[in-house]
Amino acid sequence: HTNGVTANYLVALGPCLYLEIVGPKQGANVQDLGDRASGYSKPNVSGFAFRYNLNGDKESIAKKLQLLLGEFRDGGRIKPDGAELKWRTSQLIGLDLGAGKFPFIINWLTEPHPAQTLPQGQASLVSLTLAGDGVRTLKEVVEEGDLPMVLQPAGRKGIWMQLDTPKGRVILK
Image 1 (cartoon, rainbow, N blue to C red):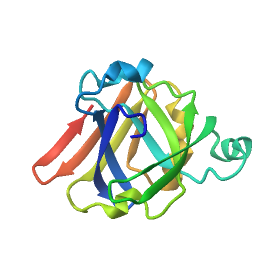
Image 2 (image 1 turned 45 degrees about the vertical axis):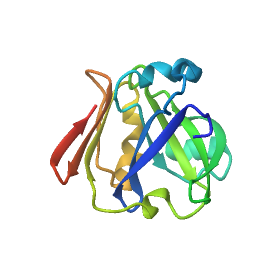
Image 3 (image 1 turned 135 degrees about the horizontal axis):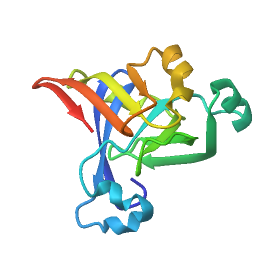
Image 4 (image 1 turned 180 degrees about the vertical axis):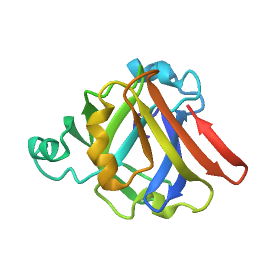
């Protein structure tokens, strides 16, 4: 990552679906991440994103999705193979999935989608559970995209994933 503190590893869960494992680079000072540092103290599912075209004005997109959006932020990096990745993100406002959780939308500005360049068949997503305040606002997005997501508006806040792997079913929290 461009922050110099974290590195990422991707696992394909489908042609346009992946799990991104993010952790501190060896020798990096995690405290340099500021308020996100606590998210790296133990393994956890710290966020989720879905792909949506963010080329347009924020208000129109927010109205169409019926969601509150944060500022649009452009990002990018050069992969080890020299290919350039570019993206635009927006935080999902009003979703409280618990401390240290970061829900957002991502728009890939370069092709191919990162999951399409990964080995396929290592794992597949069974379900993604989002639990917390405001998750009902995602109902139409989940239904329209036919996403394997469970929206849980009450109870313990958090994000859980069930994956099928060659070694059996795994639950990540």
